Image 1 (cartoon, rainbow, N blue to C red):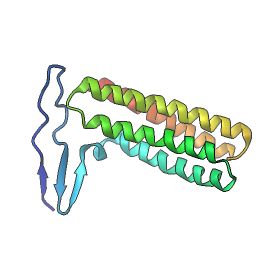
Image 2 (cartoon, rainbow, N blue to C red):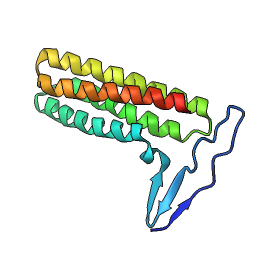
Image 3 (cartoon, helix red, strand yellow):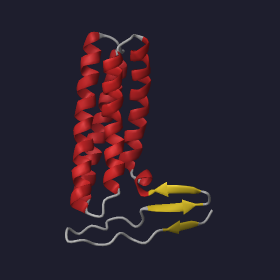
Amino acid sequence: MEVFPLPPLSRGRSGGGWGIYVAAVLGDMVKFRFQDLKVWQLAIEIVNELFDIADNLEERKLFKFAEQLRAAGMSMSNNIAEGSGSSFKKEFKQFLNIARRSTFENANILILLGKRDPIAHESVQNLLVKLDRLCRQITNFQGSL
């Protein structure tokens, strides 16, 4: 499989251009640079688990909780992905900050659901640990930009 990277991002006044490529063509598949980010990969892992919980909540007719959990979950990975498309580090950091704040929103929803008993305490605790790890990784990643 041959990789064809796109040219580097242009450097702006705020020192953008942190990435090597926007997307690369791998055979017939396009791969965006955010897909290589550990923070995005962990966010996607967590989002998949949150979607499973949301599916169970819908079965219990807790539609608002399910909708909110999905939206807050997607906000983490979406903002990491969207921010990675920026040409400027400062702007990317702002998107990472939104993603980080979404980890807190998800933690709050899970804690509330855990108190109301629609999901197991062990599931809540496992996800809270992952959310805390993601939050720390985002913070460290922001500092490295």
